[in-house]
Length: 140
Image 1 (cartoon, helix red, strand yellow):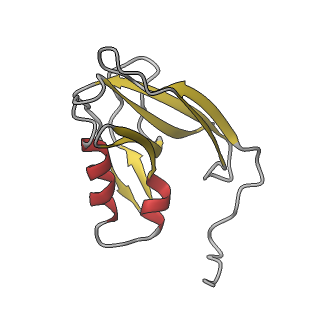
Image 2 (spheres, one colour; image 1 turned 135 degrees about the horizontal axis):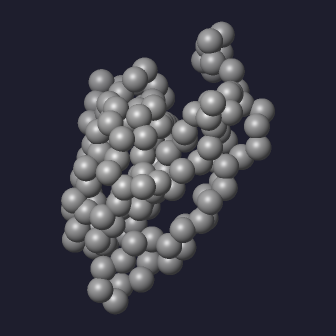
Image 3 (cartoon, helix red, strand yellow; image 1 turned 90 degrees about the horizontal axis):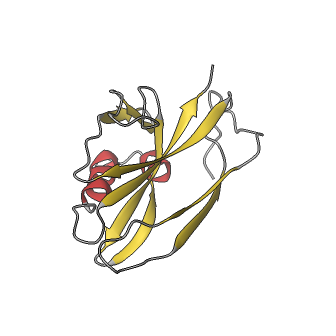
């Protein structure tokens, strides 16, 4: 067991919950995703689910153990500077899944960010015309 980092406080806030339809292409339907997960930030934050048309234009970079947005997205209601990317839709062939960005970055491997980018680029338009990204946005 790893020693707790004194600079990291576990949030005691209520879990985030959301559900959304997995994007489709043509007549293929994949169903609904229901998510329930703990907030990362101990301070006030909100859950933001963003659906972007492909190809994806996302400006983000690793900042410690998270991937943070560095440039506002073009869509109203889209990502904003400072948002933390929590999950992205990932395609394993024709099978969709949600990729846990924070869990990947928490491992702090040399290639953790490369794994995040690899998950993002599976959204190449082969199976869906949109990507779903889930962000945690600091409030206040």
